[in-house]
Image 1 (cartoon, rainbow, N blue to C red):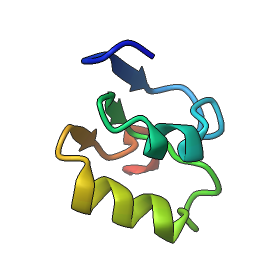
Image 2 (cartoon, helix red, strand yellow):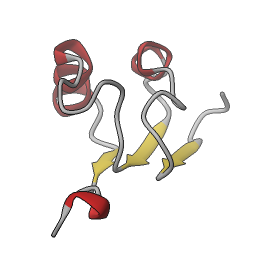
Image 3 (cartoon, rainbow, N blue to C red):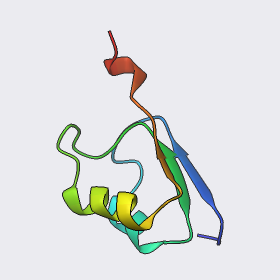
Image 4 (cartoon, one colour):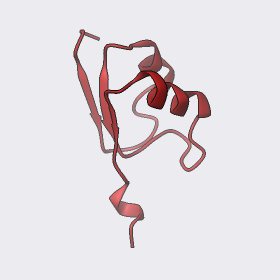
Length: 65
């Protein structure tokens, strides 16, 4: 992807390949869904929170009652 690209995923987990996202450190992402929820990939979580300050995680509003 191009430098400074943004991915916005509000559809389903599995649409974004998390391993590819981790390797693209110049890409930003906003998401409320992840692969294998609620068992989110621990390496992906660490990568996002430690080295990807441009990841924005919002709660999945379908889960809120």
